[in-house]
Image 1 (cartoon, one colour):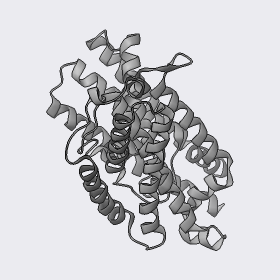
Image 2 (cartoon, rainbow, N blue to C red; image 1 turned 180 degrees about the vertical axis):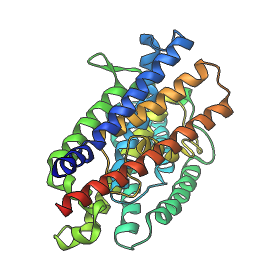
Image 3 (cartoon, rainbow, N blue to C red; image 1 turned 45 degrees about the vertical axis):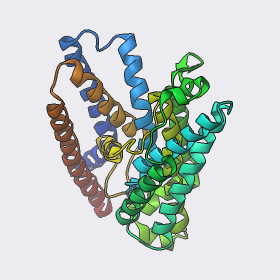
Length: 335
């Protein structure tokens, strides 16, 4: 009997890894099937395009993972992205000699301010995350239209140095992909090997116990929403550089895609659980679907339906896995 319980314990511990391996296996099988339908899918050129198109999503998914782990949600990131992208685009069009690094810094600071406002509403005013972020989403979207006067900033108004941010390379790697890799490495270290990173998970797992243990929950919440805003601001600049266009409705609804990437990657929507590796795989899967479905001539309407079914399946699997983990924890306590 003891041996059976030990086996169950071991299985419960390995469940998160099994989930990620299962997602990786699904991505491999899906890629093979798509390659059979269209031999151009796994070409170097298409893979490069896929990675570049997925980079922005994956950067945002890192921040959203931290927010969801603390039992929160941020619906304002699409509007934050649009606002930071618009202000940066207007700045570089007025001052074309500005260095691209300054443009990236400007967008990041704007996003950081936006994220900190949402964080203050949640951590200090005790407003529910979904309400606070939904309200600020409309505020930021309105500000985007106000600063632009309702007009666009087109490619011919932007200097070449700014548009080259998305097309240039660093050490032979596209700049978008390179930035995404750096961000993943930094946050992997942050959540895995720092005290603050562990406190983020503690807040999401059991807020009452975290408070009793001396963790300042309000500071943790303010920090994660500020980080989310900073990443949204950074991606706003990358987005505008990539598409060479800044519009008032940029990234409308994109926050749902980011949340979907996190859920697909195994981030528990109830908080307390999530891994960087899972978020990478979730973002990659969505990127593959967006890239591959048009290549195999799937109708745009069916594309949305297929993505919705896959997300729903991921949520169901996540619930089942969570129940098994809780059962494993219960068995360990009984021992």
